[in-house]
Length: 154
Image 1: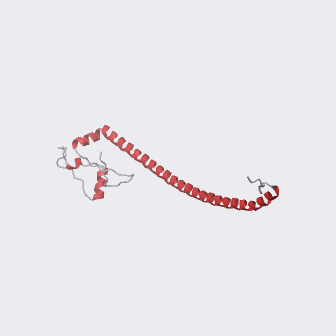
Image 2: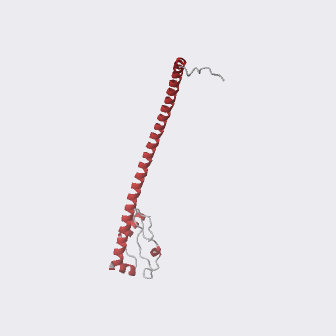
Image 3: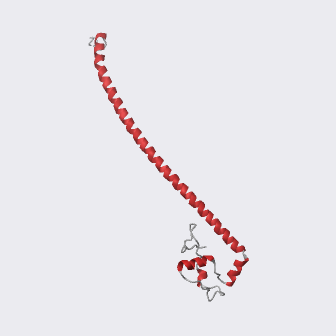
């Protein structure tokens, strides 16, 4: 067995050895710190870019939701108006007479005639109830304007 003293255990040799190791440890710490800072900076930039993209996506999605909700509300209002008109026509005795006696000239039919350039003619078989125009769906304006040519099937 070797009982010689360990050079690191003696105080006079420990101090110079630690002084030699200290700059190496500081250099390793400094490089590790720089690597950590670079990685942290990269992660922060990626996070900021992702947050900006997410924010932009959410803003676009919210604007689409708002647009769809307003279109839905408008469609519901139009549906309510159409139902109210149909209900008032069902209770109106003049409209019942018009259904029995045959088709009548309405403002809507006049507008259709002006748009197409045709004249309104009563069918020869209006009393029989089998006129060709009775099987067609009524022409209704769409989207708040008078878009003649859009057919609504009831």
